[in-house]
Amino acid sequence: MVALIDGDSIMTIILSYEDSCIALCIASILESMATIAVAGGTSPTLGRSIVKAIGQTPNKAIILSRENGSKFSGSDKVHGAEVRYVNYSSHDSLVRALGGVETVISVLKIHGPEFRDYQINLLNAAKDAGVKRFAPSEFELGPLADGAVDALGLKPPIWEACHASGLECARFSCGMFMNYLSLGSDRLDSEVKKDQMLYGLEDEPIIWNVRDRNAELPLKDDDTYPKITLTEISDIGKLVAAACELPLGSWKPAMGMVGETIAVDEVVELLHAKIGGSFDVTTVNRSDLLRRAASTKGLGSNRAEIVSKMVSQLVLVMLEDKEGMAILEPTVNRLCPQVKPCSVAEYLSRL
Image: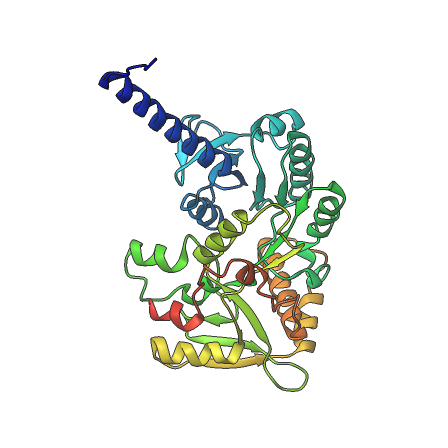
C-alpha cells in the first residue's frame, strides 16, 4: 500500500521542520546567554563602560541601583540596560533582584562603612539567589597593596567574605585610569570630545597635570622612576565584558588588566610628543610622601585632607615598583586576547 501526501501536506511538514529548527536555535542562544548584574551600573564611568560593553556581547546586562523614581522610573533603561531597584540593607530585596543572574559585578562607590556592608550583603544574597560568580568593587591597585592606603581599608574584609563564600570570585584591578592624562586639557573643546577622552571622569589631576603643564614624579630610593599600570575606562568595560563570556571556572582570584605599564617619566615624554608644550617637572621622594601622609590624622577631617592622604599613600605604593601593587599582571588580557586595549600613545593621539 502506498500513502500519498499532497503538496500542501509536504509544505506543512517543511514549515514545521523549519519552525522547529528556529525554535531550537533560539533556545540554544537563550541558554548560552548569561545575565550579568552590575551593581552601581548607573554611574557615568565604570558602570556605563561595563554595561555598554556587555551589551555588545551575547550576554545580557542588568543594573542594580538605589536610585528612586525622582531620577529613573521602573520602566526606564539606563545605558541600554534594565534597572532593578534594590535596598542594599534588605536581603530579600537583593535576592529578588538577583533572580536569574549568573554573575554580579560591583562598581559601587560609597563612602564609609556602608561600602563594606552593602557589598557583603550583596555577596550573601548572590549566594542564596544561585549566582555563580561575584566580583567586588576594586578597579584600582593590585592585591598586594591591601592595607597600604587607609581610604581603601574597607576592601580587604570584602575579599575575605568572597573567599569564604564558595562562589567563583575575582578582584578586577586596572591600575590608574588612563583618562587622568587628559583631565583639564584645553583640547577638550566639545562635549563629544570630552566624553570620548574622559568617559565621565570628574576629578583633579594626579601626578601629571595637563591643565597647568606640570608633573610631580615619584622618585625611587635609587633615583630611578617607578612604573605604573594605566588602563582607559572604556577598555576596562570591554575587558570585563569579555571575562564574563569565559566559561564558569575560568576566573582567577586576581584578574589584573593592563592598557599599558609604563614609567612615569616616559608619560611626560609622550605628553611632550603628542600634545606639545613644555612641562614643569618636579620630583617627590619616599620621605616627603611619608611626611605628607603623616600630617593628616586618621583618614582626614575633610575631603581635601582625605584626598591628599590617599594620593600620598597611592604614590608610596607606586614607589614599591612591584607587580601586584601599582604594576598589574595582564591576566584578563591573556584570557581575552580578542580585546586590544589602547596604549598611552594611542590614547593621547586622540586629543
